[in-house]
Image (cartoon, rainbow over all chains, first blue to last red; front, top):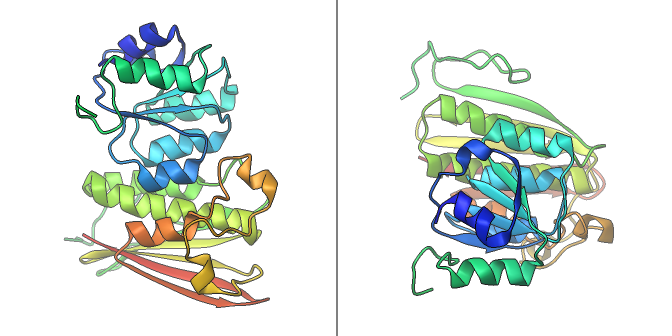
Length: 118
Length: 158
């Protein structure tokens, strides 16, 4: 699934990194606890979260993620977007809630493990 | 593996001169500012990338250091971080003069946390920091004296 498809499926607005929209991603995770992301995530390229602070961007960078989706229309500050831009991470915001956003992506084939059968 | 004429990134604070056998980067971790926590880890990640390390090694080093950095900001009012590239391993030494860890065994358990509630609302304080540091490194030693501070030494083999 491309990052652009994620944007379309979630009705999201891209806030930075639009040059990455064509990149392919194979798995995603959703969490508000960054330590859990750091503990359990492996090779997931997309982070969905309702948490908005600079550590979300840094966590994604540590995990080599390509895209962050903020749920419930949350918008990061310009400082956060600058950080993401520096790290080459695409950032978008969707009006969907976490459960719905994850479910939508999952049912369209973007699982947590990267394999199509979950 | 480590030639003497290594490129030293000039934007890294206090990057030490390369020695024949090891290359060390030193950072001060600002304890006043949660927003800037992690800057040193991001810089280490960049430096290791420039040195040509494989992505998995870079990720392990930077995640372990990042969790340590967050810990120093949450608990100890900051500290120092030293990353040394040696032949075959990368060593990370995190030192602070914070309150120390009373019970290291307990602190190493997943889910045990003494972080204040406001830290949880920032996405940390779930009691995963030290266990994560152990998870991503090949060696970890905690040296802590209550009331004096904590020094954590970690090694990632490559």
